[in-house]
Length: 420
Image (cartoon, rainbow, N blue to C red; front, side, top):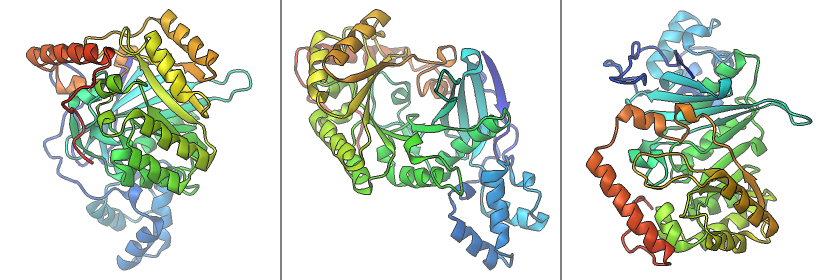
């Protein structure tokens, strides 16, 4: 594993330093700028700003070339702008909303996990995964991005859930994760092929900004990603799925399912108490019917919890006959969780059982384990270890709740998400 610090930010906050006991970025003392990010400003609005500032409209195209074409890291890299205009732009906008990025390489350079520092001191993560060409399959470079700082859903096997909810990300903060990755790829002669909203946060609880960011990412004049190469993930926010269905884009919809029985899913995905699993799958099927796009279902495998014969039967019954595909994912280690990942041979047997029931299934291999593979683990490292007493209480509660769920009893007290 190697680590490096990319100077991807606007530079006005000073050089970041490592926090005590680890290499994650710390908040510069002079960080005060929370100006709008240029990457979320619509082209027409930027042209109007130029004209109002007494500049020719074509200056907006020069800024756009720096943002999307030249992949500049700062306004100083956009050489076509006069210095006075650059100063005025810097006083009004942020060319990059990521002040600094700590990149950790794993899997012989095929996986890069990045910890990004935002203007208010919040930290988010993105993961860039390289898949070499194989046979008739072309090379892929897939970026997993965050939509929130922290998460309100509170899934107990997720490191982000351990952090709690911070805030929604702005459109530019979402888009700039992609810009940072495209710069790194361009330096190696590679290009980004896929983006998945599967990082920190629940995308459909920040849906206005997520959809605005998706429009920028698929705009041929900006990032230019094909709609079918963009995946929106949700843990089951039914109103968000229905809103997406009304739009009928060609995005891939991925549902973080993790259990097919309501008592257990109440524990693993707490918002299941608001939108039970049958409602979630029904809404996802409506999206599939409206778009013709197959729905993906993510299923983290937890030994003795959701990998039993009863779980296999329930999942097969839930998805049989639907145009759906299940991705089985071994659980990553999380500090507060008493559970372990399902052994590989049992994951394979579970996959065979689903395939025999007519449900398309893939077993996913976790990547980047040596740098903290689970989403939120780098940010959790930066935040420090949770108190031992809190960890013990959380573990005891999860043992109790999961045992109750395996008996078919639903939990009475809601946890996790508070927002509608």
